[in-house]
Image 1 (tube, rainbow, N blue to C red):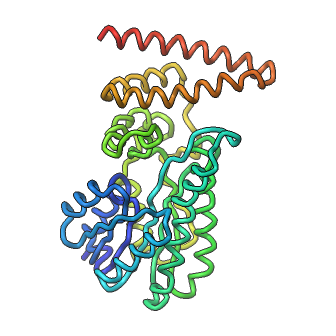
Image 2: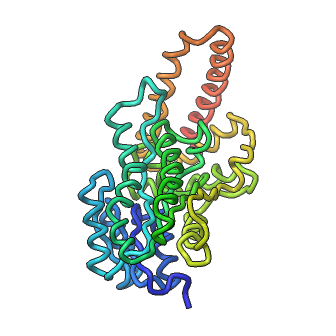
Image 3: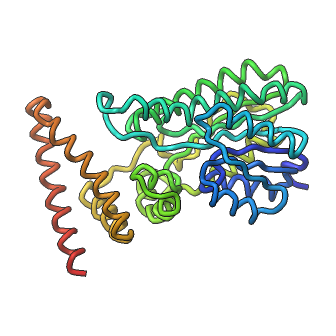
Length: 333
């Protein structure tokens, strides 16, 4: 007996990372069917094939309402029901302070995270009401609770998901429908590589490469894994959690209890060593992205209050020396 025997799930962002791990686990736990929705078609189709006939892939851009509706209809057409929706697709969003965030990129990030979660609910609630049961799970983030753990539009979207979860729980409980969210901490996935503009394949590789860095920030000294979130999603989807709704489950290794202080020089060295392992063209992409941020920080220094400017200048000069040293060492290899 599996924990999800006879149930059908739709999982967005399922081609890799958390979505892939969750699709695999749900099927292992007896799910009648799992519809894997994503825009990374090659990876998604390959994964669905590997997982067997009860896994179906559909191209889905969650920023488009028609695509979300199509994926929901596809799940019902293929398997005759829809019991679980895991709204998990995401992007890192644009880096920068409030005045620098491009409006179109802000809108896109909100659409991919918060608006997509809303639309997944909107178009599947009528189906679940007729069934008399249903379960929504949405990927939030530690960035939805605390500033500095994600980009601006990403963090705002994740905070919005927490409130959407509460609202949905109150609206839908009487129909036998539950709504919960998961707030991952530092999970080894491709989203970090996406933030640098790397291709999907390289982004996944980069996510695995930074495990050592992700291991040092929180009380539990290891990187979070996609499987950690998959097991949290399984718990929220199965019947043993039938009295839990409106909650956001933190799966962060204790990160929100307190971050472990890090030496910025040591951290830079760790990052540089990872970048050095990338192919030359991918190295250029990452270094250019880092350079953009450094240029902006330098430009804005003139507006800082004197004490803050002096502290920032000392820190940047120190880190610059470390970077130059690492580049020279790398060139000798």
